[in-house]
Length: 233
Ligand code: APR
Figure (cartoon, rainbow, N blue to C red):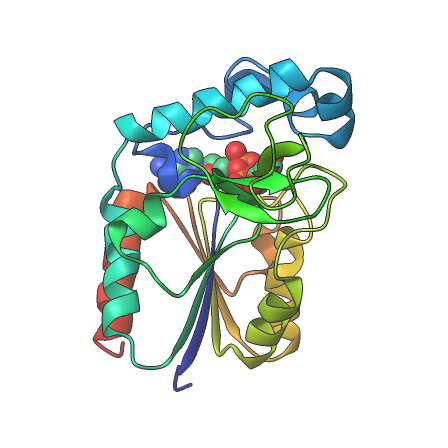
């Protein structure tokens, strides 16, 4: 099959070799916290200090990490692939854009963004974000981390669904396949006739849905795969 339109989904595994912690690592804790204590609307309502501080720490840590070979290879694909391409990341770090990817969207939000709970504006944010920071747009002291919590709707689902409907190839990289709707993208892509490939350290929850699975670290597997795609293999 001739490949023209590619959709790629990335998860925490693509940033693991840069030193960014995955969510479902050993012990099931994310940087020492249960995901539900820092990643739900209820957690934000009950302990805003903890939740804001948690994301402040993650944002601060971005300065100390660098894109790895997988991010760089994906940015090369973005530059050199003349067909359709959409990189959908579940990650809230900025390593894809720092590597140079532009045809990219963050479906689960971004650490370097703040969201106003009052007016809904999203504002670029570099510094710490204490609770009750005033919104630059409406002035309400209601800025929160721009992170899609469990139970909230991911960003740009219509655009993602459209791209999946047009994709000839869907590739999932470094995600456990534990969280919907992202975990269901492989089935949508297959339904519309796309070939499907998984690149992951271990088989994910949805491995059986993929036409092909390659197991190993993203920093090794992704550059090889991208070389193949660009060579028309
Ligand atoms: N290379 C490739 N894959 C790796 C690597 C690596 N170097 N290291 C770990 N992995 C794989 C793991 O085997 C695992 O399957 O990456 C996956 C990471 O899974 P999770 O920690 O569950 O991360 P992710 O799938 O991105 O989580 C999805 O869950 O909590 C929410 O919103 C959060 O976006 C996140 C979503």
